[in-house]
Image (tube, rainbow, N blue to C red):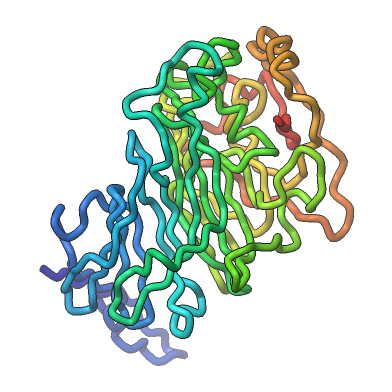
Length: 393
């Protein structure tokens, strides 16, 4: 089945006496179905278009398929993945130099020795540790016969994961014009025990997977972020200049380009401008709360520079539609310190914006807001915008 969507000449602007009439517009967009159904797509996650117009696409069960321009689909390879809840095979991307090196990148959950079934919601640290896992960014070679060479794997980066509980993996991959790799990661946090609002749970007996402060709001953690790295020929990576935290900054990860997100499931880098476009999910609550934060709002964001979203882990203390490129100042976030702050966090606290960044520093990114968002949410009057979300270690 094919569907063509031409731009109708009937909607063209009328000619003026001083200008020639515009030529009829050619078809701007054509949609052609190449693969459809479980047999050809599995549980589809992401795709990458190769130079020959064939498409690599992933299924969460670990299967990588290739569909050629004629619509013929075959299995290119399959990874052995851990697939509880949302984990499994996620993103795929072709290297900018694919035509010569045939490198492809995959983001997936390796099997490891993770127990089967659900992780406990409550217990001791020893109950949760067996479920500590990773989501892995690896590079593979797609052989000349269009099958994946599993033995060619170069393990580039591991992102921590609290397994056995839902949710939020992220996993989109893209490149900028300079060949830097961008990876989106979810907050790896269960949002279903916090009445639809931001999941913050500091009880010592609680599974850490219920507290997004450890991930999305943590300057020393790779989850709930957009990461930017430069992958070297040998599979190692370096840090491009201009990320959110300079290399060597205490209690931070230099891979972080932007932070404070829930599940930036889709991301794209405009190679002409360097702007990173990202879709992120908002809270689940259907209504706003003056003490707990905003209702359900999903956002489409564009950022030309490193950025921090203030609205992910502390909507009750900040306006949830603000984004800043000011770098959070690391401070103690030990479990003892967090427990002392538990009760105070229930009351919105005014904060003071730091002084402007010096010349040459990253500038303010595009606002993190939805066009449908209430311009005067009930919590806004009780809080001011913060550009320094608290780092966690």
